[in-house]
Length: 120
Image 1 (cartoon, one colour):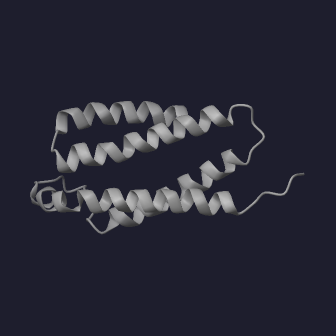
Image 2 (spheres, helix red, strand yellow):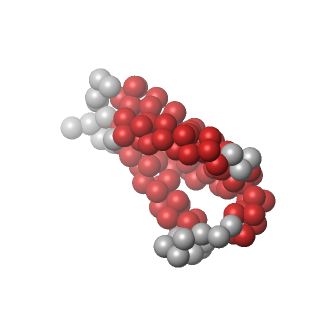
């Protein structure tokens, strides 16, 4: 059995965290307006989102590293779909929070859902 390197795990996790932090920073100014919107009582408190997204991005980075180190013949296409869905994920935040294009963001989310299903 081939020994797996820790480096891809570090790279993928850090890449996810750095890019998502950058997106969070770019969209942070629009959060003031989002906080003012009347939301469902089922909406979690704001402090939950950064915690959950950080955990998700770490897990996604670990998953990408596992695929990267696999011997699968489809790893290139799997990583390509992963990268595309990640880019769609980041763009959604900008569409929804910064541009407030809620209709487009909804349809973008449907496309993102399809990409996530393909990634799984």
